[in-house]
Length: 295
Image (cartoon, rainbow, N blue to C red):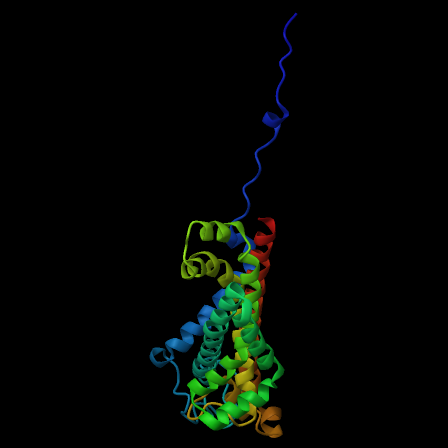
């Protein structure tokens, strides 16, 4: 009688498929959004050396002329090239959005991580400061700062950056509170690691990803906020931004009726830019939150 061969059920199981890469998890929409944003940034940065019309040159086309070859976005009420105006306007709008969220990221993120790690009286003071900033009317604060300090790119960015401190700081604090209780932080303390090393080496790499997702969302908000300031007449002096361009294009009902393209094209670019920033930020948050839950 032949001996029956027995096999372990574990040997019969198919190997688990490899999880998709981060690039695949982020999806096609994310990479299309990043591609659009990189294109806008490239055009804005290299606008001075690209073959674009001078944005201040009038009579490039007829007054409120529609789009055509060589005048892709048409002309405005003075015959200026709307496409060139849109690219040059991106330089200030993107710079303001980037500097504003950078200020919020550095100041709010630093305070949030430190308060979440050390806690105690320092945490109470910082949390109270965050609540105070969130309670103050954002638009009034921005108007106050720009009126008192000036309407340069730096001060416009600074005023919007202050508004970003509290949201970024609260997120950094919440994430720090979560990761400060993890085993790898406890092990680092037991091994005698200094607080500075734990914060930089252990906490910061885990906190920076959700903060980066919020930074993309915040940059979109800052771009829209700069446009709001432009409509109130307190945007950047001596420069062109998307908000100022849209304001000039819609300065009269007649202009909007005879040449709506002069306002619609820059509005469309602002819409797509903010949409891509929001979508990219949401995808980063969703993918890495899912990874965190799976750990």
